[in-house]
Image 1 (tube, rainbow, N blue to C red):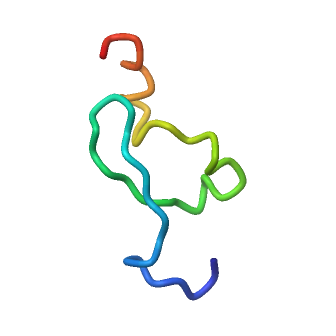
Image 2: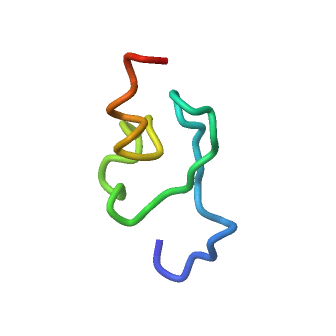
Amino acid sequence: MRGTKKQNLPSKICEVCNRPFSWRKKWEKVWEEVKYCSDKCRANKNGK
C-alpha cells in the first residue's frame, strides 16, 4: 500500500462501538480478521 493517501485506505465498522476505523500498517497481514478498532473494544466484545 505504499504511496496510498489516507482517504483511500480501506475501513471497517467496529463490532463493539459501531465507529468506523481505517486500515493500519500493523494490520496489513490480518486485515480480514480485524473486527475491533482498539484493544479497549476487543476487551469489551462480550459486554456489548
